[in-house]
Image (cartoon, rainbow, N blue to C red; front, side, top):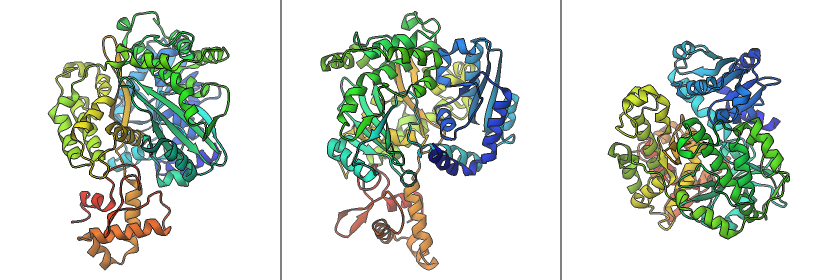
Length: 574
């Protein structure tokens, strides 16, 4: 843990470490009974930085609010976020908490884009002045960059299974070699230089799709401790909001145990209020993933071994669903459950209500998907996905609710009345896959499955804080969707190496290269990558004799990052 703290703290240096301490001191002085951590990143930041927000305070994610009404009633509640942007999420968390009759509620944040608005809304700011635009960008980018050096997922929606890396595997090279040999094209990595220097790495394994489901696992390696957090993910086209799990399964018992901590938990799915419907959707997602956990982990038994008999980390489970749900989970985990057969898994994944996605129209909007299609037709998948979520963010008014410009599913008046609704609009996994299937042209690897490309890109964007998964709620079901996050996708490895190269050149040569030396700088970077002079996760490849470049699968497992092409798109080369 100490190494994690040092790694994350170093990444957050530009964010004023004294401000983080001021935030902690403000929360502790308030002496809360319950601390609600807003957004997906805050639980990870608190854990990674070992922030103590109260000697006796219970800490939960804002996702846990519908499960902790009994903890909130009559309690002093602190709602904590790192940065106040528009304030929609934090104010919604406050309103949800107030419905459970707390004794008092206070809001706390590290900093604000507009301090005046935040202070008027009652937020206690560690940095009381508005962040300048550049400072705001640095903070927004630095947080996900720091969390990428922690061997745990950014996303808290799934079970985390702590494992030990089996001998003789002890490095990223040996682990990646095993994964590549075992899963071939169905495994990809999202490793960068900063992660390798911190002794961590990440990989994702995809299984063939069943009934439209996305079945995958993310592996978070920590080579300092010889451990790996294994995260199974079963993503349904639609969520039933019901206990449709096989009889006698742990998932069935877990669904009942957790959903029974909700208020009005006995209501039919169509009668649930949005708060409880969202809660049940998260229980569905978690239990779906638990259902495949043991079978998926068995595929990796040559590399990983579970650290305990617990089905997953109950402490992380408690952050997501609250202390009452955690207690019930610990009780049922002691019981014996039968082994679920493959036929039962097929039936579960093939059920009609789960395999039929909820309707969506966003990809039909020309103003949203047009740029994405253009980039995909040029073979620029990363730029295509970025354009898709950026254009959606503009259409829904992500940075300003008054800029909402869609006619459906919500009117401008509905967004004005409840700005949070616009943050529930996004693209389903299947919609993104279909866009890639129809429009993407991959000249290097034309046989690569579109769903594998999309899986790779979504992992990368989520890790960078550029995409946020959430749920779109419908009358009788809901679907997991993806919208824009606060940060933007980055090319840290590529640009760092570019700067390294340019700084080593005499000024005359540097000017000559920047004015038109694409081939020359590509060869220089290839030499650097092979020489070991610069510590990098990148390697090189060549299309043909005399044409050297940084290529897909030999560099960073993603398209659109050939270095000299990147320089040209950024206007650094003619």
